[in-house]
View 1 (cartoon, rainbow, N blue to C red):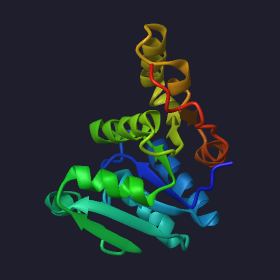
View 2 (cartoon, helix red, strand yellow):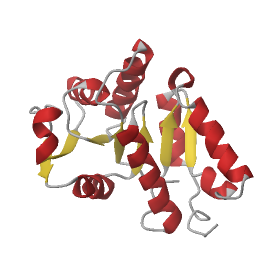
View 3 (spheres, rainbow, N blue to C red):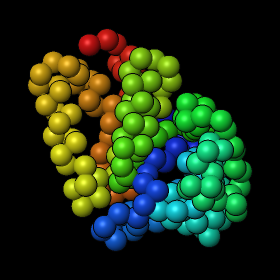
Length: 191
């Protein structure tokens, strides 16, 4: 059983086309707040990031934002958070988020969301940390990505055990429970 007190949530700085994406962000934040789990996220007040933070705060939860100075104005740094950390670079942002979180979840998002998720998974694979990683597959948003990940396994670029590092669920509430039971003992072996 993994002890999870905080979750780094990677998600879009846009809301996306489908309102279901915002609903998934709200459901995840409400569940986290109910369980007294702290949100660690990119610090913005827009898009799914803003939905997550605002929902956490409205429900009495803790929200910690980490944002580079350069993005603070572009992503409208959230001024009402429990904590807001301003850093110099994206590398520092990701490192601090990883340090502050016990697990990682990705909601629908774009290139940044993908890059952050895959870096977290790679750090688990390489043994830099042991944090379970999850993906909320809202309305099949990540179906093509999951298919490609299976293709990487088939072509022997990713071991099955490393593919299994990523837990996937359409329900944010169920995904949190899955992350609590992920066995990472085999994760750090090489391909």
